[in-house]
Image 1 (spheres, rainbow, N blue to C red):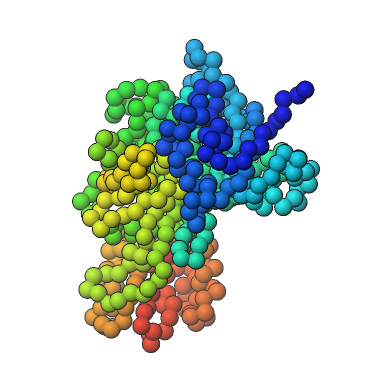
Image 2: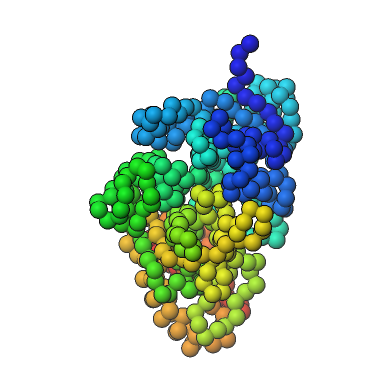
Length: 444
């Protein structure tokens, strides 16, 4: 009897651990991992915004391009005979059995395909099992405004059925061929590839391209981590440059929110460096959650729209995709790292660096625009003291800027054409009689 190409399990704690395990890592070991607890909460029915998964489909003998590169660079030449084939674990938010899934494979219009929530590749390695992962973002609710600009469209082929999903690829750190920085860069390069038509190297290729250059101790493999010089090398290897802010005293909550928002809104991934008591870490910011707009009041200091951000979402290779990062009033960050597996208390960290991989043709920086905006804000404060003004500063693709300008209902036709070819836009989106006037600066 031929070996079945797939297996179907009901979604529960034991079956999730079984699905994420392999021949070298038992389900009991999987349950000890931080990733398992996160995926159980993210995929299950525990929160309103969870994915509410009901069924697991395990696809055997899957070839993962990302793992195959790492296998070729390192694992194929080790004494341990590691397997080169992975398995891919798919998730659906509807219950079904084998017969119904077989029907769906034959009928591509079957309703279960609408319930697809993504997949996790399981690598045949000891403990470090989580490979390339594509999962839906948090579900939308009426009480939250979530935005995920650092995502892209992926096409997934499952037994001949093409499925579309908008997300960003994630995987767990493989400490042998790549540090946490290698994984953060790998996630970021998936987005920059669609923005700037660059390639996506594997984590081992990223580690190799970072080069040691005697700036850091150790060797390429096994990797003990990348410093900022090496991260810059890796970014340059794909044809981009680094916009780096490192250990600045001005890392206030307002600055962090405004800087990250200015780049992330365009879809640029932001690499955020964190410092825990026991070491440093790098994550990739993928989105943010805004407060429900309660308006702005006139203040002595400059008001920014980014101040309405409650938290960021980030790919953290030590936890999972779209983890929650909250910026506290004292400037510390509350992460999704649990203090202990049996407690809901989260660990805090200090932000120590921000790095954005950008195209070399993007010359303006956030500070360039912010500094000039302060002069304009001072003018409005003196001229219109009773008008509340909020500044929305972010990078914007020129085509998006032109489209937004031409469809505006608040601008005259002459103003539209005068702004159409300009590089800086100042747009009043409500009349002077309104209590709030918002100025948008899109710079590219």
